[in-house]
Length: 257
Image: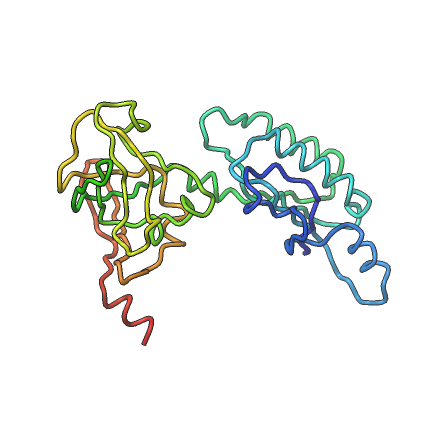
């Protein structure tokens, strides 16, 4: 198989746009044409594109239209096509029936093709939280709550993308009575999650729960500054907690020497 670049994406930020200018992800149609016309043996029986990022069926339809425009002439030679990932199938409001219609219509146009999707986004969406605690509260122009976690080390996408993580029971700054800047426990000055407000004042030891953090937090987390990785815990339906794994300073030390 070969990953191709449909040269069209509606990715929300350029950092996550695999079809952007000078992208290294995927072969363009002109390059595939030259490859197939060359004397190089080219046993390609499937094409793959990945151009979505937490998006709906309308974005898929538009990407698929570009894909067919660029690569449709080659599809009769293929056995399969992979529509990639980024499908927000389990998000509330996602039009599953329209997704079924899109797949069936494509299958009707190319009946010999096996169609694949990568539903990792749908599987991981809203399946896990990052549970943190307040270590200290300081004041420098505003109240700042220092947490036992780190945006830099444990929630890097909130800085890279960037985006504002949802915190359970909170509001925007000034929306509720008590506003705090939530900050991490590393030396990075910009290790900040953002400004949030709460109905009651925070105290040392209070839990702060960041929603929907499992799918990328677990695979991207680092031990920057020797800060331990978050423990992995399963919360059962009966509210009991089962610790799967805990991490310590030794995990940081041992991977460096």
